Amino acid sequence: MSGLYEPREGQEPAAREQDLFGRLPGLLSHAVENAAGWARHLHGHDVARVADRAALAALPVLRKSDLMAHQKENPPFGGFLAAPLHHATRVFMSPGPIWEPQGAGSDPWNGARALFASGFRRGDVVLNAFSYHLTPGGFILDQGATAMGCTVFPAGVGNTDMQAEAVEVLRPAGFIGTPDYLKVLLDRGADLGRDMSSIVKALVSGGALFPSLRDEYAARGVAVAQCYATADLGVIAYESSARDGMIVNEDYIVEIVRPGTNDPVPDGEVGELVVTAFNEIYPLIRFATGDLSKILPGPSACGRTNMRIAGWMGRADQRTKIKGMFVDPAQIAEIQKHHAEIKKARLTVTRAEEADKMVLSIEAIVVEDSLADAIAATLRDVTRLKGEVEIVPLGMLPNDGKVIADEREYG
Image 1 (cartoon, rainbow, N blue to C red):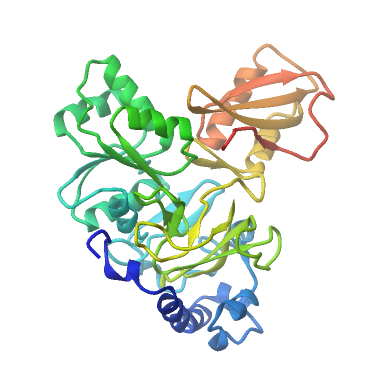
Image 2: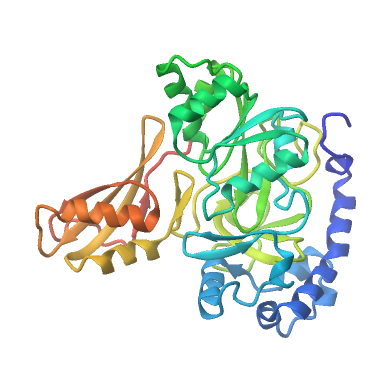
């Protein structure tokens, strides 16, 4: 089928399932034999018999919070690396902190299929505005693009004036980055009188692509698709031109479980997205992303036959993605430790002018004129994001257990 990146995207679902679960016992055995962390986590389970979804569902889920704890106890990878470290091309440090090795191959995060489904083609020049600093964000789709024959301008984050100049000079056909930043770039280019018309397609991730923003891009001549990716797993699912949900990528087994449990929910019910990835260097088995989603019925109209999911539908916990970066309740606790004056804190996330906005509200025992500025500086240092700080009267913050309140509308 000419509209596919590779023929197996259109294979019969039963054949795909047979292939994945035929390979799964080998992956599990490799993980248990080569990674002490997996040997402990899967102790007592006969991994050689895990050959269907029911058997897979009997294995324990590994949640990111647990992996972070294991990595802290046994740095850097908590015993879950299943090959010598020199087999990894790069090692990354994401917020938390959590350590991630780069897998093998020219497209280790499986980004090429998502780019192809979004209209990117061999020979395209692509501006990549994901961060190349510390985290794998920039590399995930960079490698997918180069694997399919694109030329990448590694713009990274910031320096918007220079990026606008680069667009005018290099004439990239495509943009890769967060949903919000494309608007920032296009608007700034217009302000500077730069010709930004070469950008006609984009693949975005790291945040929600709100319908109003997608419509605005379409009105400006840019067709924008989104993919669902994580630093640990790579590109898990992506949109096609059909825009009928997100298609699960090849070489991943996706489950939806009831939050806080190991138990799959019926198709169509919202639950926590759990993923098994075929990565021999860093296998992740029933890895809980903390994100909510649901399985959609039937295949995509584009001809790809893999499972479809609804995409990102919120967090199963309070860990929240803001401007493409996760912010964890533990980071808010760290800010409180830096400032003894803080009695209680709550981070609220909203939208303003098609961009994420975060405000840290604090109840303070002692309030000095410089306190808000000092806390804002700590907020920026800890989360790597700018946010406002407001000091509220003692007892004003709700007693509902929330440290992070995501008040963005995702309709």
